Length: 249
Image (tube, rainbow, N blue to C red):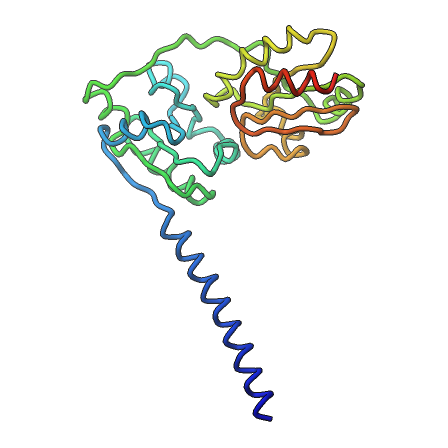
């Protein structure tokens, strides 16, 4: 009887330790998560360090007047705002801003609720940034003629070939996607008649994005004979992409 009691006590002890460790892990994860409001000087230091993703949540008209260099742009008023932010890698710090800090403050809370652990909000917005004399970028908005919208049915038909098929899943608002676009177009031209290379807009091709579990952009997937044979998340060199295609010609 004493032996049985001792075993029960030992089992309860192990269970208690396991629960305690799990609670400690959850507490640690919660303590690591934060949302901080910072001024323009601190915000610029974060942006310049290049450890995270800068997110402009203003309207396209406001963005056209000038934005922080390398910022990804998602209009806070877009009906699919949450869907779009969930395509941003969640292992990165997020530096979010708007005109005066109101929309970005609300956006920061939405980001946290959707699993972004480290969020910095520019408390007084781009107004504070400009008052400090920090630079903005102005670029002419040019329509991207190469990015494709495609249905799931047409996409699956596209894969019905013995040629390698390299797909760049991206969005027009994602800065890394925009940086990769000319590289993908160059690769497409270089492998003409040997492979199919395409850039697909995940925002407009939601069925495809859902079917292939695209949870961040850019994402590169190589298919052969209708099957996925290679996948990469994030930016990648032109040489590595070429090698993947050449190895499967």
